Length: 199
Image 1 (cartoon, helix red, strand yellow):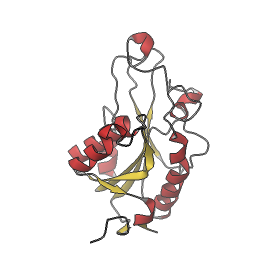
Image 2 (cartoon, rainbow, N blue to C red):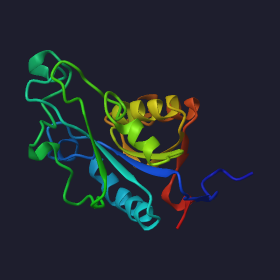
Image 3 (tube, helix red, strand yellow):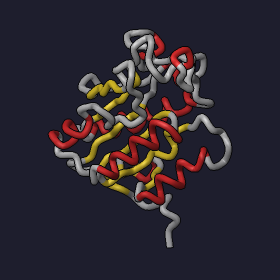
Image 4 (cartoon, rainbow, N blue to C red):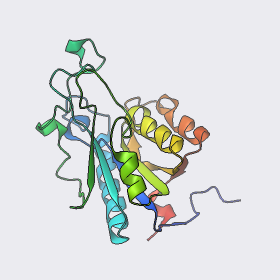
């Protein structure tokens, strides 16, 4: 029996690509840098080119925090200030080749409410449904926080959910990435790598 790495998955109508929080502040040099977070960018660019060539929709979530967001340490939260709306840290890196028609989903925009999932208090689900989406392919940062919660919600909203294992990185650099990969698989998400998609 195949180990799954050599199985091929054909892209089709009803598929959508979701990039989670690939923003400057989560990359090396940013205020909340994910170790090796920059490694996802060239891989995601290949996924982006593939989905764009198939005329399939692309969604990019982003933290878009007010300066006094509740998640920041100076407000009693766990994180250093990061991804403050309209700053360079909140921007997508220039090296990420997002198509012009990418749907940008801003989350955690209210001072008093945090949000890890791209579905949390956003239009992502309604936009996916409007696009006729059945299957979602999710990559980005960070594996055990915003990627995990976005995957959980995608499954909760009954999308067939694929995790781009070659295009996610975790804050926890141990082998099990905080257990996030196993948890996503147990919940029903399917781990894939770029070579498994039919060009």
